[in-house]
Image 1 (cartoon, rainbow, N blue to C red):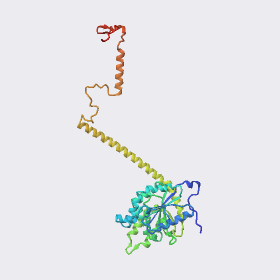
Image 2: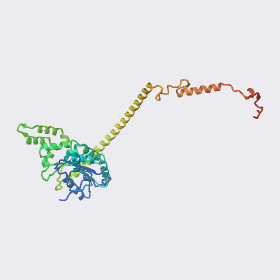
Image 3: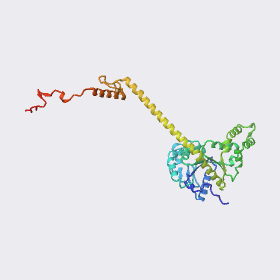
Image 4: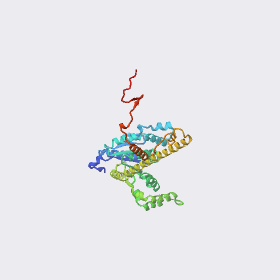
Length: 377
């Protein structure tokens, strides 16, 4: 059967839009790497090769070529040896080290943004290392702040047939605020219809709990907990995008990219405005904190100066109001100075004018001024 065209828009503006970053996460053994290979081959067949990042430092073999590979930067085994760590600790430390240079990685991705439609990011198999660590949060936030981003959470469908396992997988979704796609993989082994029913129908999930979850003492604590959590998160599940795919056969690729396009629209409509609002709020708080700090600093400097003046009235901190008592200061304000100037002008006008004829002749050494003074000998 011929494969269908991807859902990405083919309009004239599609070439100018930003690429969509797809973060592929999931439990170990859910088929993330195989799905990455299928997505890569599918996009290549449509002449839309993606830009691929591999963030799993412990993977021994990748069935696709990555543009940026964490293994080229960090040696996972050497990290374990130097820091005396186990496998999980080595993966987390390697990811932490790689995160310190992730601004450069993001720069490479942004340079290729106009040339690609999709950026695929493969994550470590131990999901908690990426979803519950600081480095995973930093990488996710850095990517989401630059480009439209969605999270594709891959679930092993046959293993999720248990209601408790299903709920454990669903709880991970509640953590992220990014647009989300629930990808039920391996539908060639077992269809995912039961999971869709559980997500949309609370009573169907309760019935599955009652059927499979009773022990010899009746309803178990886990069943009661799962039922309560499902009831609380029912509205959350109803808004999820869920698709079924097969990484082996390629089934469901069209539905997957349909969901990716919906995530892109949701990102532009909801996530990015909220991100810009949070950035503006953060900048306002920073400015307010800066102003408060300056005000406190100026107040502290005023208190220190006053204390210094009290301790040493004649020191360098003494104010100019303790001035020389022998100096006559006229007016402390501009208005007083103007008034004094006006009074001085009035006094000058009151003095009678005297002509040259009224003055007595000047004499120098007993001689009149018009008589030449003798030259020095």
